[in-house]
Picture 1 (tube, rainbow, N blue to C red):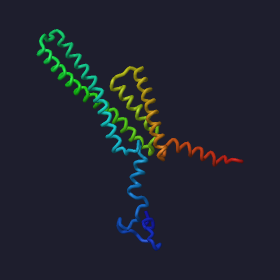
Picture 2: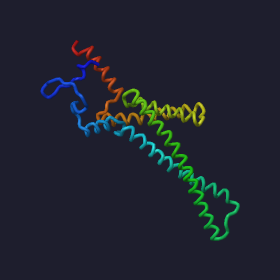
Picture 3: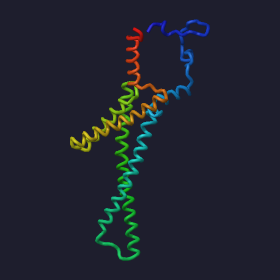
Length: 218
């Protein structure tokens, strides 16, 4: 880079070479405007540093709730089956029986809730992380990256659980549909807020070039 490219213009029109960062001109946007634009250009109006941890936390809580409900119910049924041959005959015995049953069910609910929550959180975090990776790689956040992340995680999920070929195809189908719906909703919300959508801009550029090459009236 030549020295001429490092000079700046002062208020009097003179060209001087900056010696430190204080000599550089002030930015045209305020900090608040930069933050607003940063959030507006992010998916769901949340930057990745906030969106991914939030999705991970919410998915863990959802998985924990479902897993705890299922685990508590199954543990209670298991306790009843294991003690069906020795049911109590007194009031005190029934009290201790139900107390032990509730403790056993609560223990199973917590254990299964944590296990299910971690699994759901892992797959959800992977999906959001892959989506963000493609956003950074392609330089745009749109439907294509969301579909790619859904299908990729769906393939890993099928491979991890050793699904059969029909089950894998069904999982890929659901992942594709989910990616289209979720990604489409994100693009609609982003477009309403003024965020540039990659494939929409590509279509506009193509239509603009065709209009320039074939103007009306010719």
